Structures are given as C-alpha cells and as structure tokens.
Image 1 (cartoon, chains in turn brown, green, blue, yellow):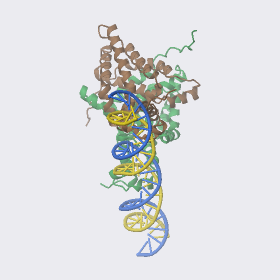
Image 2 (image 1 turned 120 degrees about the vertical axis):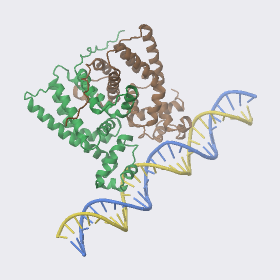
Image 3 (image 1 turned 135 degrees about the vertical axis):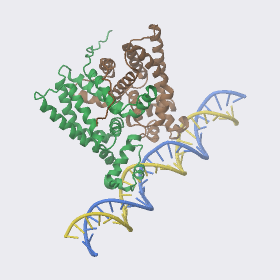
Amino acid sequence: MAQPDTVTRILNTAEVLFAEHGFAETSLRNITSKANVNLAAVNYHFGSKKSLIQAVFARYLDPFTERFHKALDELEGRYPDGTVPLEILLEAMAQCVLEVPGERNSLKVFMRLLGLGYSQTQGHLRRYIEEEYGGVFSRFTELVRRATPELPDVERFWRLHFILGTVIFTLSGLDALRDIAEKDYGEHVTVRDLVQRLRPVVVSAMSAPLPPVAMPRVEVG
Amino acid sequence: MAQPDTVTRILNTAEVLFAEHGFAETSLRNITSKANVNLAAVNYHFGSKKSLIQAVFARYLDPFTERFHKALDELEGRYPDGTVPLEILLEAMAQCVLEVPGERNSLKVFMRLLGLGYSQTQGHLRRYIEEEYGGVFSRFTELVRRATPELPDVERFWRLHFILGTVIFTLSGLDALRDIAEKDYGEHVTVRDLVQRLRPVVVSAMSAPLPPVAMPRVEVG
DNA sequence: GAGATATTCAAACAATTGTTTCTAACCGGG
DNA sequence: CCCGGTTAGAAACAATTGTTTGAATATCTC
C-alpha cells in the first residue's frame, strides 16, 4: 500500500496527536518523527505551527460546512414557507456531523478537536473558525429562530449554546466517559448510541419553560 | 494595604493567568514577574509547576467540597427517607458553586479553571481531581439516583454528564458569549442570570422522555 | 543579641521549543 | 542528457521552558 504524500501524512499524524495531547503540548518534532517526515517539512508545507493547526481543522470543517449547507438547502426546499421543524433541523445537523469524518478518520478525533478549539485559548484558532465557518452557523440559527418563534431571542441564543456545550463536552470527552460507563454498567456505547440518547434531551432542553422574569434588584434600606 | 504573602500572591496571579491562557501556555516567569516574586519562589514553595496547578485547584475545590458536603448533610436531615427532590439537589449544588469564590476572586475564574481541567489534557490534573474530590460527586449522584428512580442507571449517568457539559461549557466560556449576547441583544448578563436561565433547561433535560430502545442491529443478507 | 531556620534572589543549567538555512536529491520537459 | 523548480534532509539558530544552585537576607527562637 502506497504511503500518502508528505502533507497528508503530517495532517494525519498531527490531528491525532493534537486530539490526544492538545496543541501546545504537541511538538512539531513529535509530529514529524511519528509521521516519518523531516522536521522542516511542516514549515515548508504549512508555513508555521499555527497554520498547521488551522489546516487540521479545515480538513474537517470544509467538508462539513459543504454538507451542512446542502442539507439546509434541501430542507428549505422541502419547507417552502421557510419554517423547518426544530427536530428536523437538529437531526440534519447531527447527521452532517456524523457523516463527515466517516470517510477518513474517527469521529472521536473530530469532536475532540472541536472541544479543544473552544477551550484551548489559542486566540488565532477561535478567530479563524469564526471567520471561516461562522456563516453556516448563523444560517442555522436563523432557521432555528423561525422554528421557535415563541422563544425570546436572548433565550434562544443561550439555549443553543447550552446544547452546544452538552454535545461538544460529551462527545469530546467521550473516551474517558465511555470507560466509566462500560466499567460501571457493562455497556459498550458508540457515538451513534450517544446521539440517540442526546436527541430527547436536547429537544426537551430547547422547549423547556421560560425562566421567571428577572426582577430588577431593588436595594432595601 | 499590606501585600499578601508570597504563596498567595503566586496563587492569585497564577489562577487568573491559567484561566486566561491555559496551563501550558502560561510560563512560570510570566506568573512570577506579574506577582512581583522571584522565579525560584514557585519551586521553593510548591515544588513544581504541576503542584502549583493542583494548588490553584485545591484553593477553590477544598472550600467547595466542604460546603457541598454540609449542604447535602442538611438535605439528608430534612428528608429523612433519603429522597431529596431533584430540583432541590440541583439547586443546592448551584448555590454551593455560586458561594465559594464570592469571598475572593471571581466565579468566572473558577468556572474557567473547571473547563480547562476537563479539556486540557493534563493527565495529572484529572487524576488529582478525581482522587481528591470524587467523593462528593459520587455522594451527589447517589442522591440523584434516589431522586430519579424511574431513570435507568445508564441513562442517568449520561444525562448527568450532559448537563455537566452544559454548565461547564457555558460558564467557562462566559466571557466570549457575554460579549456576543451584549452586542446582539443589548443585554448585560451576570452569572446569576445565567443560572436562572439554566434552571428550567437542566430540569427539563433530566426529565426528558427516554430514547427509543436501541434495536440490536441485525445484518440482512 | 547570637544562632538557627526560613525565605529571597540572581544566575546558571539542561532540555525543548518553533523556525531558518543551506545542501542534496528528485523529477518532468527541453 | 541536462536543466528548472519542487521537495527532502541534516544541522544550526535563537528563544523559551522548568528546575537547580549557592550565596544573601530576613525571620524567628532561645
């Protein structure tokens, strides 16, 4: 079997090392040695470590956004009034996330990278992701807005991030949690099982009753 | 105003730098210079950078676990059959989280550290937290078990981690989200507001309908 | 106040980091 | 065949990392 060329060999190795140990904790020498590639190759092909990190993300996010856009196109066509039911929207997003890495590496790496992208304080990464892929997300949230007209805008904003937290946190820490679950309950869980479990929880979260209106706090002398 | 002694000066500076930039991205020299302390002081007082990180966590988690244990004691006394309603349990936990850092620094730093502790792949930290503070958590989950007897054990396990993800993810990324929310909706949000919003969402998530039973996949020839 | 202990300090240590440089090898088109 | 630009390679670079050392200073005890 022919070895892939240098840049994909670097990307393949880098993404699993990043996912395993984080960005700052993974040295270029560690990557290049495991990839059987010269150290200088990274700076030659990518320019810098930062750009390598972004390239790792792009290889996942580019096909994802493409699929997601297509899926939303299809949905908007199927519901000509522009109001797609919430469950359908969430389901479409879940399917797109599930399909993307299937071709190549594991979904686990993808989710772990997403989690790191949010938590690790690599400023450049956050900016890069927002600029490059903010478009699909706002398109999605606009559809969610039409699907949940009863929700105040602020409330919907926060709830979307609540469930984003649930998904990223769970799937990105999946390995550790899976071990515990398997040890304590003897049940081997796949990512698809988890999505199955997430579905009703996410839907319930989005349609929870509104919180009591915040009283402006009045100082009592 | 008298300056606090060296070790607390180090801890005070370290915790905000860690929360801002992560552990690996924060150098001891950065900490010691901002704390007006000699570089060697860290290794003298704490032994190593790892131990400093653990000490930063301990200063938050020790008082938290103490309060949390007391709160659970009080609840178990109030409900002698050992069945505390779920809402009360969640409320108690929220209150303990909110109260702890009030004395000293901001709740924001605490939550950010918690998020980093989960996502950053500092193996020693995970182990330290589990060994040192796993006790309260399992006590809490046992109470949750009694409060939700209708939930299968596995399902409850996952749902607890779902909402854990929501809370940590949201509160730990609060700063960035707050900026967006304020810009888009002109509404300044405090941590307490967020807890207000989280309450109904979390309760709904825990009491969502069970997912459809997973069919064992049968290969169709 | 002398002596012992605890703390601070500047300096150096050894290891590792990302990046650059320059040379050698490759490879397709004249 | 050999020449052009592209890729691979070994080595060195400069900067930064956590940690250690040994002397100076402060703090406390008897």
